Image (cartoon, rainbow, N blue to C red; front, side):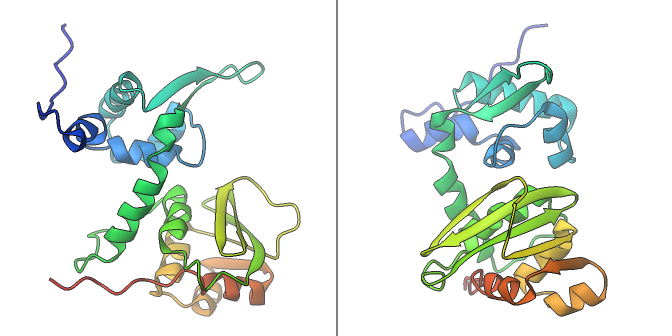
Length: 222
């Protein structure tokens, strides 16, 4: 069976060309899933459960053909294939951050509360108040849905990534959705802890200071 021709806006406009590359449904969410590092196909399926296997495979092919991502085989003993952003594809990160910040101001909230761990960690970048973090120096370990993440604030800059932290100033564990509700102000941290949805492992005061660096923006007026 011949491969279906990829749809195009058919314009020389650079914005139209960018949308030809990443504008198909699920494409930017695949990029989102790879912003914190490479993932296997099974990891991408877990992060995008509402995308069918066929559609996900098609988007991966499109993004690879467009030079946004590449497929790489890990050396033994892993011997598994992973997808990762190319250097050019990684240039989408500040664009995704700004788009997330824009979406946070939507006067119409999302119709679902479903969110995965990568999404909420990346949302920290969109919400980060650099001015408030100018005098902050701390590192936080977050275990969300069983996955380890780290966030470090130094001199008004935020660094996020996957992986454990050896000696964090604060550490928490819980469901990504519950932590998202804490960040978004829908669920006070103390209430989340009391309900058993979030566990502050240590550094309660440092964690409170950390959370204040991510204020929700005012909603847009329409």
